[in-house]
Amino acid sequence: GGGKVEELGLFPLGLVLNPGAILPLHIFEMRYRNLMNKAWEGDRKFGVVMFNTETNQFARVGTCANLMRFQPLSDGKIQVVNEGGERFRVLNVTRKGSAMEYAKAVVQYIDDTSEG
Picture 1 (cartoon, rainbow, N blue to C red):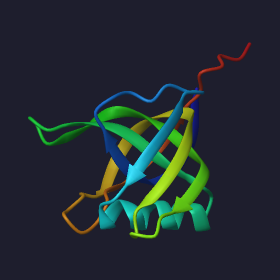
Picture 2 (cartoon, rainbow, N blue to C red):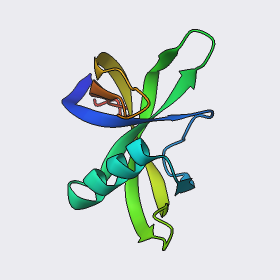
Picture 3 (cartoon, one colour):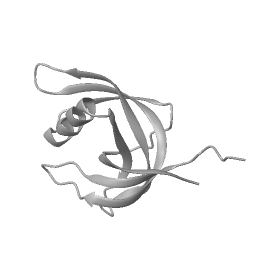
Picture 4 (cartoon, helix red, strand yellow):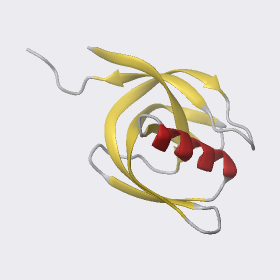
């Protein structure tokens, strides 16, 4: 079945984040500092999606990361600890990332628990 649909900021990663896995990150790029700040002030989640540098495209499936720890450092960088949450399908990239802005996409959560 299809889960709920929402828009998430995307963080490209060179690996797949598994549900339940702990992912510490050291954030230094301004666009991703913005993403983490917004997530921390909001619902504390963002999407982690593998990004293929050869095709310049996001993978079709990603994982919701739950922001558990947020520590701004004196040099402006941010130390965060995330936990892998639900997996999702990328339905539509609503903002392609640029040097200044992180990408955003409308995603649909994948219902891993098959009912019945």
